[in-house]
Image (cartoon, rainbow, N blue to C red):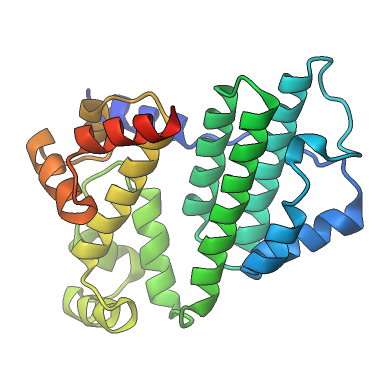
Length: 246
């Protein structure tokens, strides 16, 4: 897979559709506020009524299953936007949205859609709870993080990031370690492996394609780093994930 193909493939993977919400304003805003604040208890109360039994969502398709798939996609897009407004990294938020929309497309029953919706909402809420407990990062570190997410499909170096944020390599390295409690290279590896896990969970890409798309120097190195952080090889993780989903 060439460089252009890798970039196009990755960009295709994180493409986002624009959706408009047609549900009652106040209850929905309470729901999104609970997610944004990372309030698991409040969110679980909202989830007591299964997604596919909710009223007032409107009819987007005469087919019930397709109708709720559309509404789950709307919810995914709205969750991403609301969480971004409250500080979640935009690439992470939209990648989650894309992944759950892809997963919804495979659902065959209303029960599966409701279960997926609950998992998606809880996932975003936990991300926000974690986000809200973190210290506020400096402007330069936020720029670094955004650069890493924007170039996840490339081989990223400290020198490139330092040039982008207009800092020296040594100063950026010290600043990043101080605020993030890990090196730049470790953070990049962690985020690439998180993305790889999500791609294994929710996309049809092969292990070889994922390794290439995320710009690992070789598949063997990807397997080594994946196992270091996950405790399983990508192949074993994929088999385990499929087993749990079936």
